[in-house]
Length: 246
Image 1 (cartoon, rainbow, N blue to C red):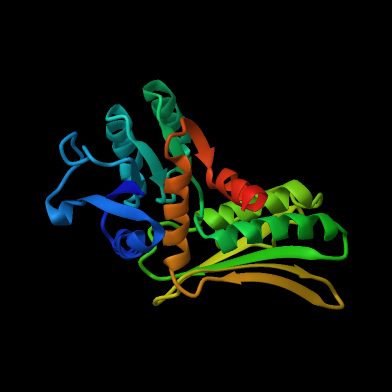
Image 2 (tube, helix red, strand yellow):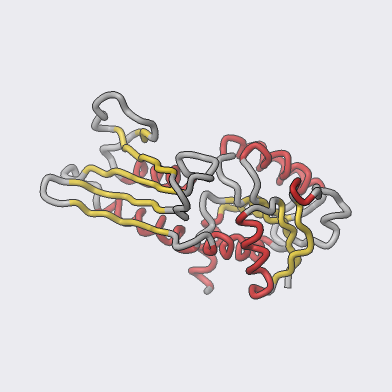
């Protein structure tokens, strides 16, 4: 059993809390302004790994404090990747372990692999790719981190596409642009779709989350995986290890 501290006690923090015991983990600390608790040596004394689900502007600050306390970390927050170099330097400087990723769903990470293979097959002039992502209206970033990863896969494998347009266009899209649109509404847990359109037909591949439980379970798996490890890892490393070793 490993001891986990939750940094942020919003929807994801509460879900991890509910799932921890049945996944051989114990929640030993809950850090959140709403609970009038903060990161400190005393609060995290019993924690083996900290799972961080807060907001993009808090990630570097939290990683600095947690790494200085020699705590291994899972970052579930998205939208902070512009500060990735700062985070990696903090992890290296303080000699701890970190797992981060755009999406902690096992299914979505398998979807990444499916899209990677599909784009290699669909790299033909007859089919024009497009993307769509939909989330609940409380999501704090747009496009999603997952959409950015999917767009990177498209640009890597589809020769005709060299750049992604996530924004509204008031002009004709250029041939080399890949258009990925976002929708925010209601309580949508998360839907990502990659399509390929031709004059004769449309091929679509879609991942739809039934709920956010998959993200919570993935974060717990990441916490168990990073326990006793040092260095920066992407959640893809966790998935590859699971697929290889079961």
